[in-house]
Length: 222
Ligand code: TIU
Image (cartoon, rainbow, N blue to C red; front, side):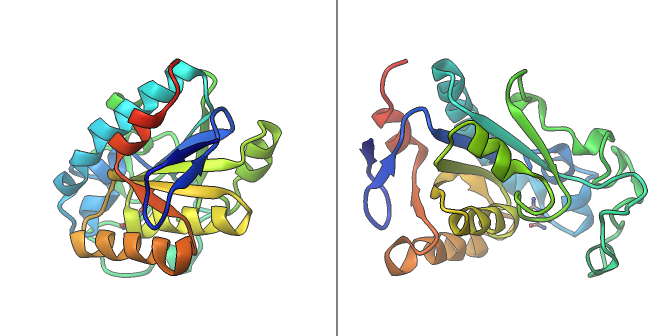
């Protein structure tokens, strides 16, 4: 184990059994014309997370450690998208409706693909998730268990929605979770700050957070 400088106290990093989790770095959230923009958000606020995630991805690939990419997405017939999710709010376009990158959040459409800078490579897990959390209706817990994964390092978007939901689900399943501060972003900076504070409160009640440099500088050589 390696102690990583983190909030609220050092994170016990397990080389080899820690998966890098990249939540929903897909065109639908990061690019104009996707689901994130349809909700009225400024998608450019998410772009600063791309470079730190790319550096972590390179570090994991160089060491042959497990990597998980997720995509928030639904079946073409929307049978896995409950009306409670599809009809909520007043977006300019709803899940399943056509946009410039295809039907919003529908598997196989251009918008659900992961941005080219972070494109998955063979051997990496790519999880399509119908919920905000990565464990609901995906089987990913069993896949991680089969690989002997005990710890998860979280990155991706958005901090307070899919990242936080996934991290809470992971914490309940017994994983030690570390969120990388500059490798996650939100459409609402105040929500990102609040999510980080909640996660680490009460003695890391959900997990830890730290900047990418603190983790990268502490990794063993590949
Ligand atoms: N991936 C993810 O966070 N899905 C969202 O819908 N996020 C929002 O912030 N809306």
